Image (cartoon, rainbow, N blue to C red; front, top):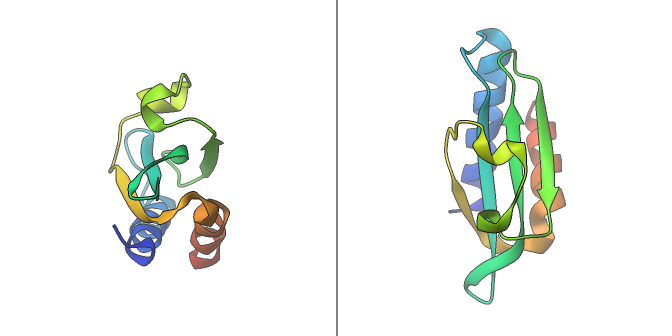
Length: 98
């Protein structure tokens, strides 16, 4: 999925939660590619009911993560077409859209 689509979708959800509280936490895992395969490293946005959020970076593939964030309901699972080196930029772009 394209970088811009991912940042727009996640930022929209966070803004919406800030206006209208949700019923539960929601997460948005984002995986990246490297040489057309899943990169070793990912990102999970955990959005609280009130729109507060946390971006959690991992140095493992998503399927290998042992963290409570993995068990939070997934609003969507994103496979970013870009390389892992854009992970920090993705976090910054979303913050800028809020």
